[in-house]
Length: 355
Image (tube, rainbow, N blue to C red; front, side, top):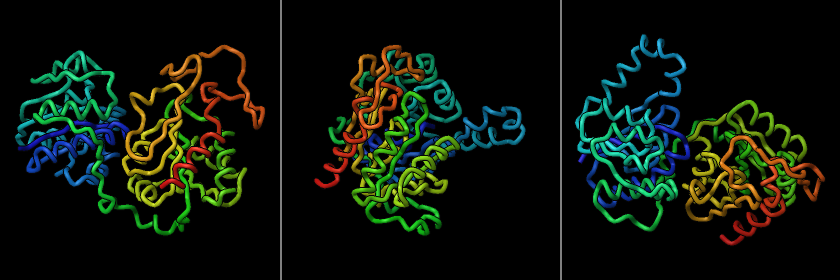
């Protein structure tokens, strides 16, 4: 049985798909799964032994210069590759128009969410077979249920990401970082401004952790994240390190060796969960019940505030300012007020000591 999976992005969504791959391989061990995925993330499927090959796509890059994409021949090459094999099942697990369109270039019967279950209802018109899945389920459970209904097996209760650490191939430079065995990774960056924990909270947390003799590792993915990491480092001792720009494989390799993680609502949070790392995740405007990390050793700190979770990229709170007890600074967004560094550190250190 040959299966083509289409789930192009983003990082968190890709990680959320891995448990369904594990389920499918347990139910049908002989199936062969190919995965259409954005070029930036194509290393991830290869960490799972159930994936046969990846077919990279570059929609994010191509749409910036459609004419250049056409002239370069990249789009023609992609269509040739995706259409070169006949599949028994073509499954769009993303549910967007951009992913549904890709099913038209593959050869085989297409499957996806029905119009009441999908993120973009018009996308369901591109599938030959439509599957009903509860939209209120967590993203991982939704994908597991989609697969279970398509391939005819009972959905397991356990979530198993199936990542084999031996398949993670970091760059040679990762060995030169000389990371301490007692270290913590802080994923301080995320896409929405409203999802960012206040910077002075990260500084307070770093001081608490270094006082307990932990080394703090600060990865970054863009200029604003790098600048924030440098500011956090500048207020602490040399136990806080700003890492060089790393690949996903490099970050995964560091996660395998870390003692614990503190993260915002970001894709790298889900990678930590997939590797079963003790993790405290902090939520402001978003709802962990729908998109939070799942796995062993995960604790969510959801906002306890009048307007949370608002699911807004811009904070519209107009009430009185909320101040930090420790520094008398204004907490913005205010929905993070009760998720203080003291609370985060107490929960993380207790979790690590219990393992």
